[in-house]
Image 1 (cartoon, each protein chain N blue to C red):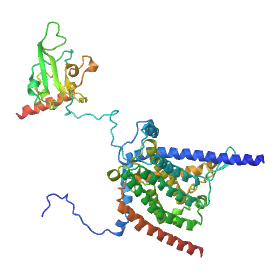
Image 2: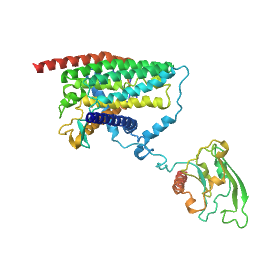
Image 3: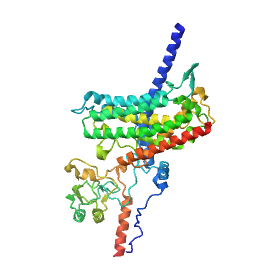
Image 4: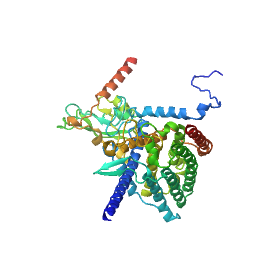
Length: 188
Length: 344
C-alpha cells in the first residue's frame, strides 16, 4: 500500500552489531547531545521578574475607558450586553445631572456596570459592538479567587483611573480592532 | 619525656585538625553537590535551576537543610524503633569513614609544621575502602527492614543485591590495579602515578568497569533501582522523614564524592598532574589538583544521570553478573600476563 506521508518509519528488528551491543558509542553520543544543551541558553522565562509581552490579539480583563478629560465614555447603551454571547454584562443606566459633565461624557451613563468574569468567554464582541470606544479587553489577567461572588467585577474594578498614570493603554488593541473592522467592511 | 608527650600531642592535634577539616569539607561538598546536581540537571535541560536563595541560588543547600530539620520526624507504627533510628546513622557514618585513607596531597607546610595530607596511610587502603562501602549495605538493609513497609523492604533488597553484585566486579577490577602497582596502599598508588603515568593508561577496561560499578555502588542513575516511584515509592527510605531522610540523601552525595576521589586517586593520578608539582603553594597544589579531578568526576556522575535512562532490574543483574564480572576477570588475566611479560 502506498503510504500517505513519508513520515512513517519502517522498523527493522535486526540483530544488533557488536558496536551497537556494547552501547558505549551510543552512550557517548547521548552524552554529547546533553553536553551541547549544557551550553545552550536556558529557555526559562523567570516569570514574576520578567514577563513575556502579550500578543496584540490577547483578550484579558476588560477596562472601561475615560476620555481625555477624565469623563467616563460609556453611555450605557447596552449594545455590549446585547452582543455578549455569554450574557456576562449587566448595567443600570442613569441620566446625568447638572454639574456632572466632568464625570460622564454623554447625557446618559452607567450607574452600575457589572461583568461576570466566570461567564465571560473573552471573545471581544463587546469592544466591537461599542459605539463609544468605551470598553476594551486588555492584556491584564483576571486574578484568581476562592469565592464566586468576587468574580462579578463592578465599576470599581473596570473603570480606569482618572490620573494619567492610572490610565490603561489600549492603543495597540484599538488599532487591532480598527484594522479588523476595516477588513470586514472592505470585504462586504 | 615531656618533649615526647608534646610531640605526641602535636601529632594528635594535627590528625584531629585534619579529620575535622576533612569532615567539614566532605559535608560542604555533599551539601553543594545537591545544588550542583540541580544546576547541572537544569542546564542539561535548558533550564535555569535554583536561583532564588542568595546569588545564583547559592544558599539553596542551607534552605534545604533548614527545611529538612523543620519537617516532622516520624517513626511509623510497628517499626523497629531503634534500628529505624540507627540505620541512617550507619549509612552516613560509613560514607564519612572512607575519606580517611585517601591521600589528599603530599604534605602541607603550615606554620613551619609539615602536615601529612592523609588521615591514615594504612597499607591496605583500597581494601579498607571496599570494605567500608560494603558496610553501607547495612544502613540500607536495616533501614528498609526496620520501616515495616513492604516497599521499603523491596527497595532495600534491590539495593543490597545490586551493591553486592557490583562489588564483585569492582573488586576484580581493583585487583588488576593492585597487580600492576604491587601495593594496596593508596598513598603508594598515588606516588607511582607522578606526572602523566596514570593507571588509566594501563587499565582502560579496568577503569570502565570500576566506573560503572562505582555508579551502581552509589545507587545513582542509570542504576538507581532502589528508588523507584512507580514500583517502590521511595525505595528503602519510603518511611523516612526529616533529617533521617536527609542523612540518607546526604550520604548518597558523600558516597559520590568519595567514589570520585577514589577514581581520581586510583586511576587518574591522584594529586599528580603533568608539569605540576603537588608541593607547590606550600603543598596546597596537590589538593587543588585532586579536587579539580574530583569535581570533574562528580560532574560526570551527574551528567550521566541526566542523560541515560535507567536499567530494568533484570538488565541490571545481567550487566553485573554476565558482562562486567567476566570482563573484569579477562582484564585481570590480561594484566597478569602483561605484568609477567614485562618482568621477564
